Image 1 (cartoon, rainbow, N blue to C red):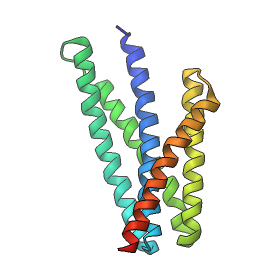
Image 2 (cartoon, rainbow, N blue to C red; image 1 turned 135 degrees about the horizontal axis):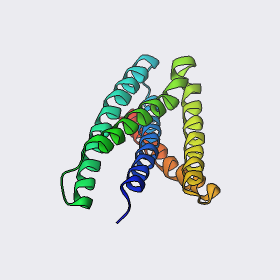
Image 3 (cartoon, one colour; image 1 turned 30 degrees about the horizontal axis):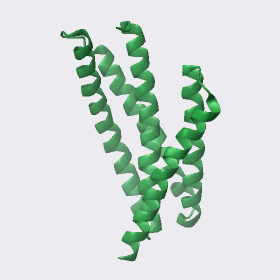
Length: 169
């Protein structure tokens, strides 16, 4: 069984990567979809801010509950809520901060340009996330960067396709 320190370190990394990835992918997927469906800047910003705030909180709560359950399962007894609480905090801030990366272009530039900047910044951030997580884990940084980029790219394409479908209705 892994030591408690290794388990908590791994859970912090897991929550950071999951939070950043989901904050980027969920937000850019939604924003791309509603932008391509023809929503105006005010609607895009309103939707984006609500999504980021609610999802960051929801992901933090989910992280806390799942990490708490996992720790109890591993040690087969009651555990302190300290590590799962810190996991939730890591999840909240990683999701919350990264969610503003795809939203930021819509604050400063017109929707038709912001759409492309949002996607580009999100894909670059996903690649960087893959590199950072690989460096921490001492793995192949290029492979990890492209894996994060590819997974995020699929979600972005899905958001765009759904936006096109809904915009056509």
